[in-house]
Length: 606
Ligand SMILES: *[C@@H]1O[C@H](CO)[C@@H](O)[C@H](O)[C@H]1NC(C)=O
Ligand SMILES: *[C@@H]1O[C@H](CO)[C@@H](O)[C@H](O)[C@H]1NC(C)=O
Ligand SMILES: *[C@@H]1O[C@H](CO)[C@@H](O)[C@H](O)[C@H]1NC(C)=O
Ligand SMILES: *[C@@H]1O[C@H](CO)[C@@H](O)[C@H](O)[C@H]1NC(C)=O
Ligand SMILES: *[C@@H]1O[C@H](CO)[C@@H](O)[C@H](O)[C@H]1NC(C)=O
Ligand SMILES: [Zn+2]
Image (cartoon, rainbow, N blue to C red):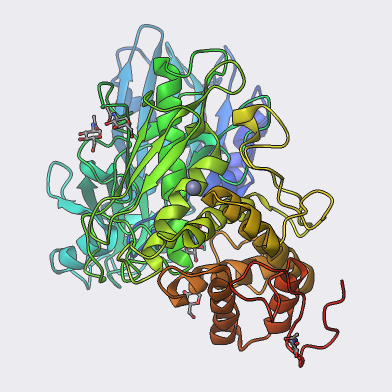
């Protein structure tokens, strides 16, 4: 019998239980990882699941001595008695939740109660092998020391539903576990009286049980009934090495501050959402779908590019990158009002109905990728083709230098000229557009304060030189291009290389002078030179004239610095441009000039 162990002190009792009976040592769980879940971020609510620390004891094959269940006795009776005797908790504070007997074992699940209401997160479980208890776990809080609010709600649940529906971005689910009152043990040691209410929107893979404080009306925690969305993709901020894509899995990357309805809003929960829809060729193969948003097919370079496995993996990668670019650029100003690409604009301005449609696996072209930007309100279209430069096919949709490049065309085209998408048409302007697109990829791949040389698309062509004439570099031996080079060039990508390399130099000087903000991807307010650069580049798009030139694009960036940073980088910018021939006295004739304004100290010296 266990009777002699029952004492008034609950925790003391547990330790006695351990020393008396445990055939294996207790394994207390001490980290937050064990008690706190991943944050649940909904439209206006961010909460964390919490479970009081679990104590768990196992008793090997012999089971707890001195306690044997008569196999004729109902499971629930014996389990409740075991818990009562073991913990000293009164019968009135324990309730049987569920249990069953299988061939070898029996399992019982017990809930803690107070004033007739159950706890949602303070529970116990007992397992039997035949008549013996072989394990006992519980997360019971100490009822003797807990401080309870009134068990009579002061806030009813029904008037809260409209607000909760809005804040949680999902519909009230009335049945079958309709709202009920319960206790929630909080991680600060307190206890809250909560309405337990479910919300669901399967189209968005949302299914939550919210715990709404019945005295304040606030959501204090929730349970997520849907597995986390995850995407196995090539790192957003890396391009594949020569050997092929390196894969990572990203869990719940969607940020609901900037993608209000998440990344998946289609009824198919496939790679289709408010920002982008990704499909294979003429969509003979369905877009990858996953009801629980787990897109984890691994790209396998040993298989053909168009194997079903690799098609799925490539679709996922492009979908992931397109949404990352949406969320990133949104923070830096490519919002609904600034003519971005979204199916639903949530009433925030701009024209809706223009998410990006992205096709992979089209074999009518090789060694290329496109982005077609219509005006605001018309869907953008991107296509990623295969490359055959290495003797076998490589998929450009698996090389993020190319994916980011294409998506950036959409942004610069929309932001220049107020969403008309007509303002980067002249060759020089097209060249600038190519340059910005390369620079965006370059920016993404610079992941520390040391600015490194950046080639583009090395995986696709199987060479460290990449797909351009030179890697981007501040070293003139690595990249010798200057403004005057334009006089000998004709093709917009070559113009683009000259521009991107100037921007690379501007970026490097900004980072060298202002430092590097490690959180620039999600925080547009940092003081690092990399953060500043992105604002100057994107503000420059909004500022510059229709069909800008190198000179007017430069001037727009310098103006952007004036507007946003009161011109603190003005001379830095001039010097960086002047170093590559786009100095103060440069004209539309492509001749290098290395002057900076006379008031800039330490003027540029070649
Ligand atoms: C989501 O984005 C916002 C603003 O862009 C940022 O403040 C926040 O930290 C992001 N959240 C996560 C979880 O990254
Ligand atoms: C493949 O790409 C070509 C060239 O852009 C286009 O004309 C064709 O319609 C595409 N094929 C499909 C099935 O979309
Ligand atoms: C795939 O994308 C296409 C293009 O928008 C869409 O029409 C189709 O419904 C999607 N298919 C699936 C299975 O999601
Ligand atoms: C950045 O600053 C703006 C304007 O002050 C603010 O609205 C925004 O929330 C800030 N974003 C972050 C991620 O701190
Ligand atoms: C070039 O610009 C500087 C300002 O830095 C100015 O003083 C100078 O007169 C200009 N030189 C020529 C040749 O135009
Ligand atoms: Zn391009």
